[in-house]
Length: 425
Ligand code: KE4
Image 1 (cartoon, rainbow, N blue to C red):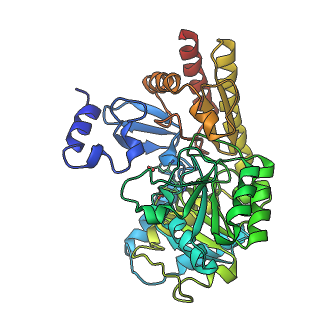
Image 2: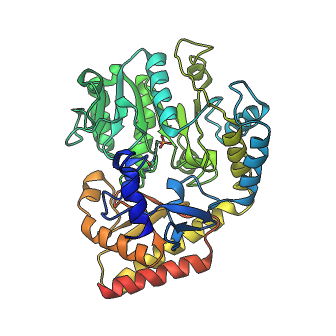
Image 3: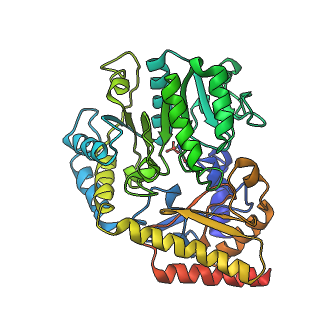
């Protein structure tokens, strides 16, 4: 038994599934998850001492790589002054000022401790602001585990959700409308039918939780126009895309101004931090200013704020995103070229510092196309790459992430490993 297997067996005695978040359990790809002991830059080491080039980066936060020295020092310095106060601190003001400067659609911003808290609060706020109940989301998009969001009907067509997660009361799920990502006409039909009851539309402006799906230009544009026309709140869930796909996040990349935005991951630099913000008239409905309640013991925690501030300042360096985008493109173009040379049905794409790989002839543009890709081929590829010392997301339905710490040598080693695997068929 390897140390990883031993730890996994032990973990399952006291932790459900042996993990504190389901996607870590390798259920989708099979086998025992790797228990990490250390990370540095682009690399992580597991309990058996094996080193991996890491393309998960804690599911997106580690845009600077593991144990970024400046970030670690900032957290250590903050910790020495106290771990938490449950009272306002100057650091929270500095981070809020930086966020509203970098995200022009946000006049006000509230810090929380996770992406789920950010999206859950933004939806409650949209419902409180509009006085409406209906929420529109898209099949395959994940916005955290708040009840209203754990709803996925069968096909997307104007369906009222039947809860896919047990524990979500049917009379709550009935307010969630699940549509197909990238289908602008279906969205128009939904608004024509329910427009005066729709409180908000929440969308991943680049979908990253059904593998990576890029938005069709007309999709986001129609969403913006329809929300304006019917008085619904447009929420861009930028927990994954925020400061990941570019310096202006997805809203800057695509030139669409949402009414509310949610953030997580990169904004905390690896520490527990999320945020939601947007139009002043909406955000002023949040307690203590307004009637929509939202709170958190560790909201704006000084250690998380220190990590977030350090990260957000470092990624503003000239050329940061050009280099990150170029390195991510080199990875996906190299993988696609290697597969093509070996006759493997494979495609890949990237947006800024996030990427998707697919065992399908072309990158998918919809949930249905993602589901038609060869999951078994991915799982075989995943384990072969793991054996070769490359750690990809343990699911065919997740995006991957490159950091500023990934070197050309890391990319070359990754491509060499993939080429060997493709050659073996
Ligand atoms: P958290 O509550 O996990 O911080 O954020 C939820 C969330 C919200 N919105 C988007 C677009 C997200 O991608 C996420 C979380 N992403 C997953 C990875 N696909 C987190 C990994 C996990 O669940 O363990």
